[in-house]
Image 1: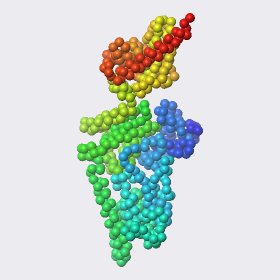
Image 2 (image 1 turned 90 degrees about the horizontal axis):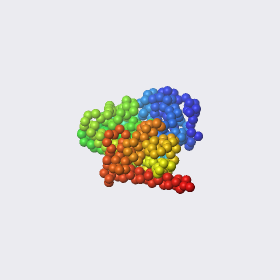
Image 3 (image 1 turned 30 degrees about the vertical axis):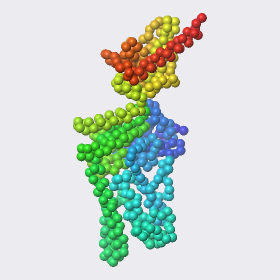
Image 4 (image 1 turned 180 degrees about the vertical axis):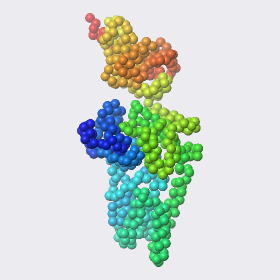
Length: 534
């Protein structure tokens, strides 16, 4: 059963910042969100009724929720990002790009192993029990190859302790706990040092300093065997130091990054593209998309993106102002350890790059629609992609019977489930304008609104249709008329009609819709005449 408004009140959510976790009937977390005011934000899900289809689907599946209070909005940002990466809820933004993310696991065994932690389809970690760390991004200073870590801390790789030492012992990658060549206490010292690095409590540099101090002490007290072991461990760090120098090279630490977003509200998808620019040159480009569900936004995207990124630039330029920009900026500064500035691109050069991103994103959106639909949007300068078009026609042969028809085109093709036919009820005589008004009012009295309304005729029919749309509270629905004589397209407020080449795909689609409405209405008219004929 869906969570009720009363059940939400009983949760007594405080009017403080924090995160909320929404669960389905199986107890699975399906969405994680943040809020400056938990009580106000969560309550809004259960009192609003104008959600997008995808958000409505989320709300319908919520049967329980939990919350965590934080000290401020920045902490809520960071906690939300961490929990999303950990639980991967169905309705949150899931970044999909060419980066590879890994989790590492230290097993719960007397002599623990270091493994790559793998998930099953439900997102749960598989394999032996243990502590999981990550995610770590390949190529970042946080991600150290599992092979190097095993060698560095001499972590065993065998599934079970053998009775005789393996090759790893003889090439000095393992101290052979299998034959008691190392005590459990000494082995665990290395494991604890490894934990400190994976948890971020320590660093490789600090570990090296501690090892050097221990090596000097061992040498001073005459424990030369231990000093030699530590020296070998320090040699193993050389490869890692080289990796870190490469990782910190200017080419991998972009000076600037540009982020653009385009929302396809019809399909409930946001398209995002990023450009990295280093020393004035675009060095990388990535494309993402996410569902427009609940609080999914450019801000939540950016935090997810950068918290999983090897580097965070000092300057980020966006196509629009992110929500809660200051909290987002502070969160990125905490993650990166340096100042971060987020702003809309204003300078001509920077704006030109953002414009380039937006043009590319527009093309991605257009690919999801029929070419004729895209052409129609451009030709008529429509605000919304006219993926769903209704076309009206009046059929009144003589004065005794008058009918109207409405045919629907979806994705550029006839959609017969949207066809409607009407007997004219309120108009007598041959008054096409008034009949068009009646048809439009009756067709949309119960909703099911298209992206574009087209009527067969000229300015008069267009005026009747737009007046009817205003009368029923739909003034923002796009409307046009197609005059048959010269195939001119009339638009509200335009002084001149739009004339398209006869070969234009958008015009051909409108002609097809107009002719189909005429055919459908005429067939209904003739059917009624046969029935009423004496």
